[in-house]
Image 1 (cartoon, rainbow, N blue to C red):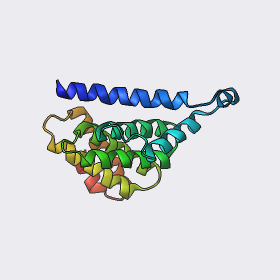
Image 2 (image 1 turned 60 degrees about the vertical axis):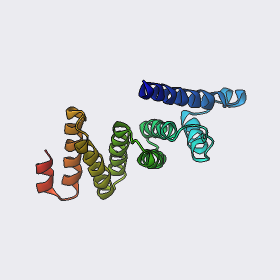
Image 3 (image 1 turned 90 degrees about the horizontal axis):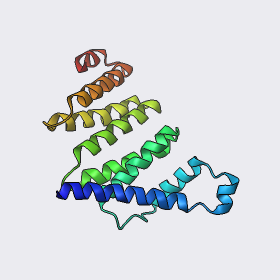
Image 4 (image 1 turned 60 degrees about the horizontal axis):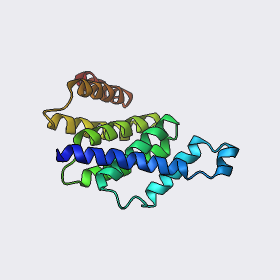
Length: 168
């Protein structure tokens, strides 16, 4: 019951943050057609300035991760990478790490590193995600298989053909 309440509070925090973000656009900016990218950049600035200090670290990490996901879809890869790293750092520091959230953020950070032409960094992020999944007996087998497939692609691109084949 406590975990459900925490998830509910985290979802409410994310929703409130984005409502406030979109409400912050002035009428003049709306008339001039403020872009989604500009609003995303504002959200990143707001998060990085620490104006979410009243939230739990888990909720703040979720905000960073959600913002990173949206930024990634808008091809704002450097900003997305930075947001994922902030989420990862916050989740790693929690006494009870939300493994699924952390694994997803690590996997996405690996994907972004790969897209940015940084396969070695992608390999490190992906291996950490897989290590966490392997340590969690309740992890989703389909997600684990998808992660191993991604690892194989990254390994292949770094010249680790034999390791790539073993990952599959």
